[in-house]
Image (cartoon, rainbow, N blue to C red; front, top):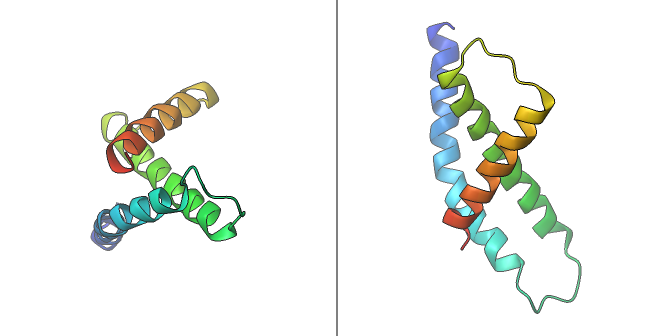
Length: 92
């Protein structure tokens, strides 16, 4: 990876650290037990939150296994454990 690409990846990591906390709070505020109407924005926010968590999970895996191949079952396990962990930390 060249310096320009590394800089872009580092900038992406910084942007994620800035965007993820308010996005988590927005998701938390939108999914209250008393909500009756379906609002598409809250599902889009939840999708964005999930994709950011997936990217962070992939980055963490690649740090430890830069040349390792990820099969379907490992990817599902990584996604499940990361999402559950981040949700408990950021949303609860």
